[in-house]
Amino acid sequence: MVKKDKKPNWTNVKFLLSTDTLPWFWLDLVFQVAKDAWFDWLDLAIWKSVDAWNVRYVRKLSEKYDFPIRVIQTSSKLNKKEIDKALDLCEALNVDTLCINAPKFFDYKSFYFIRDNIEQYKTKNKDIKFSIVNPSSSYFPPFSIVPKYRFSNITEIIKTYWCNLWLDVSWMDLDLFESDFLRMVDRYVPYVSNLYLSDSNSKNRHLLPWEWKMKLPELLRRFKREWYSRFISLKVNISKVDLSDPDKVDLLLRKAVNYYTDYYVDAKID
Image (cartoon, rainbow, N blue to C red):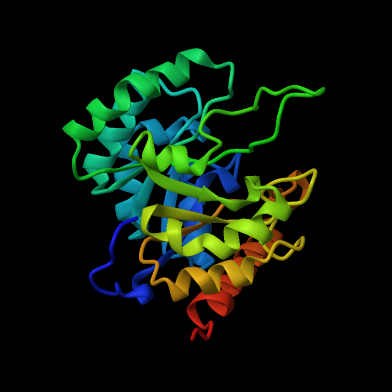
């Protein structure tokens, strides 16, 4: 594992809103809502918004709201056109982190594109942190030994593909998360470029952080103890009923910011 020569300043960690938290919102409104709710920056999921492919428009919105984008997130069906557009956005917006959602297991086309080209893209774009999301390690039913997604093994992401880890703990098995991962957090923190803050249960992923019982406060404290110095993003599924109510959306997002503040910024560590 990487040696940390000195402790980075964890107070520089920023809390981002992932734009795929607000599906069906125009990008202009997403900027406004995120800024009003006191997020620091945006995590832009270009696969969730047609607007997000327009480099000039996105830059104009960022300047209009004086609200930076610091992460570009691609779809799981990645191809040359999409990653080139993502890199164009990175250059135009001064973004240094590109996130790739892992393809499903039988999406060979996307998987082979990533496998065969990721090293070349990394070589040509040395200032970009190429990151892969760890997806679910669950399997296709019934009684199948075939996993649902590629890159479900977080060690594979780091050691085989030499990419940063985009850590989405809501995909993890709850028992393994508590019994193994929390105990070994220090091994992975140096490779994490972003931490998705969301809860989960056996049926649902990306719940609001307080909705279930994952030990997210403990996870945040351990990241802080290890002097994590990158990004934390809120990526949650908000019901259509709540999304249709601007006041409810603002309330939920502000509550999430307060949650991050209480359990990360203001958390006491040894």
